Length: 79
Image (cartoon, rainbow, N blue to C red; front, side):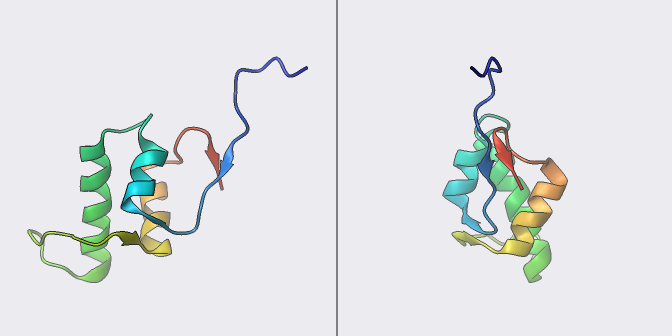
C-alpha cells in the first residue's frame, strides 16, 4: 500500500496549446500570470513588438521549454 499523498506524476508534453498550459499550471499560477509569461516568451522568440497582441494558440517546443525553465514544472508533472 502506498502511503504517500502524491499522485503519479504526468509526463510533461514537448508542445501544447495555451489552454493546455493553463490547465497544467492552474494550481500554481493565475491565468493572467501564465498568459503574461508565455506571451512575453513568444514575443521575444518570434521578434514581435512589445505591445503586439499575441493571438497564437499553439506554443512551440522551444517556447514551452523556456517557460518551464523560467517558472518550473507544474505540480504533478515531470520531464
